[in-house]
Amino acid sequence: MLYEFKVSDLADEFGVHRNTIRNWISAGTLPAQKAPGRKYSIKWKEYNALCEKFGRQPKVWPETENDIPPVEKVESHSPDLAPVALGSLSRELYDDPSYADTCLACGSCASACPITGVDGLDPRKIIRMAFLGLGEELLTSDWMWKCTLCAKCEEACPMDMNIVGLIYGLRARCDRDKVPDGLQRGVVTCLERGNNMGIPKEDFLELLTEIGNELAEESCPGFKVPIDMRGARLLMTVNSKDPFAEPDNLKFLWKILHAAGETWTIPADNWEGVNWGFFSGDDKAMKTIVSRIVDNARRLNCQTILLPECGHAYYATRMGLEKWYPEVLEEFEIFSVLDLLVEYIEAGKIKLDGTRQKKITTYQDPCNYGRKSLDAFGVGYFEEGRLITKTCCQDFVEMTPNRYGNYCCGAGGGLWTTQYSAERVFYGRVKARQIKETGAKIVITPCHTCRDQINESLNHEFDLGIEVKYLWEIVSDALVAPGK
Ligand code: SF4
Ligand code: SF4
Picture 1 (tube, protein in one colour):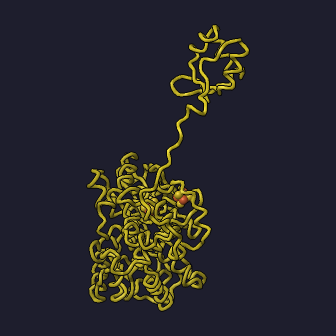
Picture 2 (cartoon, protein in one colour):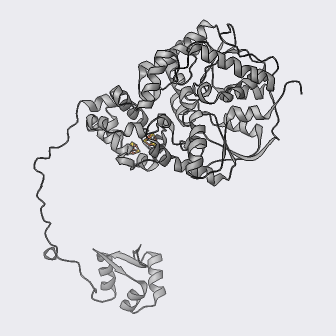
Picture 3 (cartoon, protein in one colour):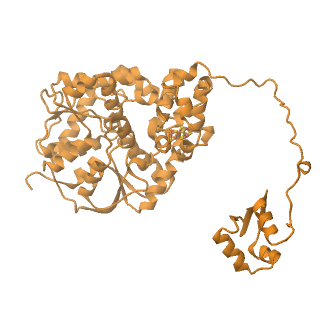
């Protein structure tokens, strides 16, 4: 039993000054601890010893056994409820059975996840359900499609659990007719027609020629889009969203390649860089799409594969090469767009004027280039984007948190193309807050998804009034024409 007292009350009880009691506490003569309400507490045994020393009767006594009411036994009202047993599916959902003992059920993952609680989604719950063999129940939920695969939960996990791998495994086990329609259609179209949007070859080539001619007239005399050019150094892919909806975006990177005197080529067939097999959990589709890039690099005798520049497409292609085509990593030089831009800047292949852009800029770290890339490949792109941005812009501020700890834009994992737009915007509230707090006027990012989510959605939903630019767009803006 503990005896709780206020200093003034105990001083009265023992007929001493309040400071005497305080001195006894600080000297340890009175081994009392601070308690709520400006009180102290002391074990009754110690209090009784003090009373004996001063020849006093204790004011309070511990309750006897007879004073304590017996604990009532609670009868189960659910006699039919069977205990949950570890089922066979539990092993299919995670690689290592020791994981079941490794997870502490501490909930750090759930605290870190910006959509914990939305429609019952909770990474800790998903982990426990998988261990308990509740795979069927997990598969009837739609949690795996609302998760952005951002790995923020893994960052928080003290036990290094592979939470995203488990959620990806759920996506992979879903019947294909349960995959969100937009995603599944993109995958099927890409497999059947060579690109997600189903753009016919003639239209694609015509459009590229047109855009190339415009660029030649605007700022790059003599420019021609190199299609199927054998022996070029770089093999490039195209994000089908650009020729389909925003063809002018293609000019940013082309202008830089032209200024650097690069030899590069875009294949006439199977030019798609986007890989939605990664989103839909379809390894077979993902492998086919990666294999097309490898085939084109070999057919055109290129030296370097420029990994597709969208965050997920970069990650999926690199993952696919490591998993299914490891020999390609030796056969070709593998570059991300960040590697390429840093090479151009450091080797002086392009000249940039960093005084043109005077607005405050900030940088959005895409999960796939940063946190996830570091964990999966040992290469995290954090400083490259900052070096490039700071070279092109005068006034740079960081978001908080950033780099490894940054939050997803809210549209990762394919959410941009699914019906879960309310969840996407809800997740994005964190990104909107981060951006607002910087006071920046421009957000720079090397990812199509981050750019679209911030520019097309969060900007309006959260009244950000912000410009969003691709990393290569800001380089293109700062480019000093060769010879000037
Ligand atoms: S943070 Fe890690 S250890 Fe804690 S509940 Fe989540 S998965 Fe388990
Ligand atoms: S990957 Fe991201 S969205 Fe998915 S559970 Fe983890 S923190 Fe939440």
